[in-house]
Amino acid sequence: MQAVVASPAYRTLATAGCTALHELQAVVASSPALESVDHVASLVDQPPVVLDGLLREGFALLTQPSAHAGGSDGRGPIAAWRHVFALSAVLRAGALLDAKRWAPAARHLDLALLLGDAGPELAAALSPLLAEASAGLRDAAAAAGSAAARRRDQQRRSPRLSLRSLGGAAALPRVREARAARLGAPPGGVSLHLLGGMEDWAALRPGGWAASLPAVRERLGLRTVPVEVGLGSWGGRAREGRQQRLMRLDDFLDELVLRTRRPSPLEQAPLAVTPTVPVTAAQCDGYLAQHQLFKQVPELLQEVGLELLRLVGDPTPMSTAQEARVWLGPEGTVTPLHFDWHENVLCQLLGEKLVILCHPPGVGAVEGVGVGVGDGDDDDACMYPCEGVPNASRVDAERPALATFPRFGAVERRACVLRAGEALYIPQGCWHYARSLTPSLSVSFWFAAPG
Image 1 (spheres, rainbow, N blue to C red):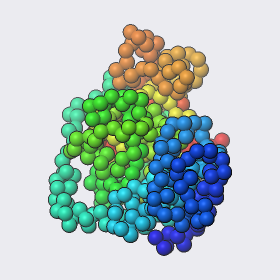
Image 2: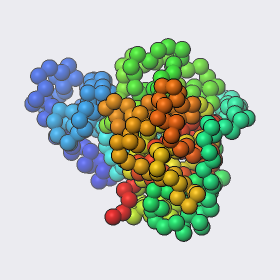
Image 3: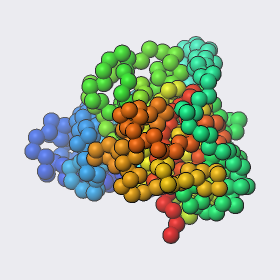
Image 4: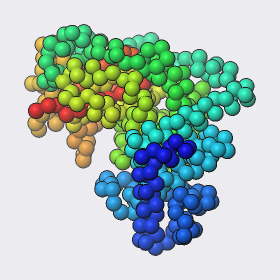
């Protein structure tokens, strides 16, 4: 902990947290946690019972959707609570590590990053503490004799679909990296199923963090992540409008990806951990969806190659990679038909994913290798966008109900099955749909086209 305290990131956090505490005490009329604070001492000198009270009150506030409404300008009570929460969580984590309470220490550190919005600099500074907690938990598990049971769980395989259906869509041709490069950068509205370009990813090699689901568990199992709740049931109960749940990643893998353990009950409060609550997985039991994992665990980015982003014309590949979004979910997870407001390179790390791309009539494939992008009112009419969400469609792209959505019958559909080590370039505005054919781990790189 001493090395962390000496880091610039921690000093910034401590200053912001202490200042924010004074701001909250001046503007919040009624707060049991704030009233218990010793006004003479700094936040870093408060006793554990005071820090725990601040964490409980901050958690209850920051996990509500209202905490993210309209974004954050870095000012006001919500922003101040983030700073207080982050510093309090880090301080308590240090004490928990000293007491060898590995799992709660790791949870406190991740909550500082997720709810405190502490940033990648602090994430890098806290990495040694998380590594210490992870090592301690592994040693404790081995001493308890659970290592063999964990290996047995990891060897179980989720059932795979024997039929590789493309949902009635025409196959999107698979192209080699060399041919993709000749198409230009970016390839102007052409969607490309790329068979090369990820050879420089150390994450996919033996020993890499994404080489297998057991490797993901070994490297990240202790980390707390926001799992999106879709339209299915969790533990056999209705979700009642809940949006996200905080889980340790190894619990998520066991309960919902590998299904080696019965799901635990829903937490009582709805959680909205990210600044914008994603509504992406309409058919799932749980989905780690569009999570900025590389900001939470910055060292993972060292094992991700950038050549593929350069190939498709990304002018700032390092910045794009730092903002990348991770998708991890069980077989059968569906992302409904929609389009993105930016260029997208979807990289498949583990498992297989069916992707269907759609374009309205009059917007054809280019050189027989892709799907173009359309615009205009006629295009929108064919896609039946959701009211208030113009980039999301009401149509099931895999099984379209043409009696209900007759104009969709004129839409051309192309599809591909992405396998580990393959990527799909999806241009800005191109409608697409995805379904995981197996447990699946993917990364989306979103960037703006140059010029």
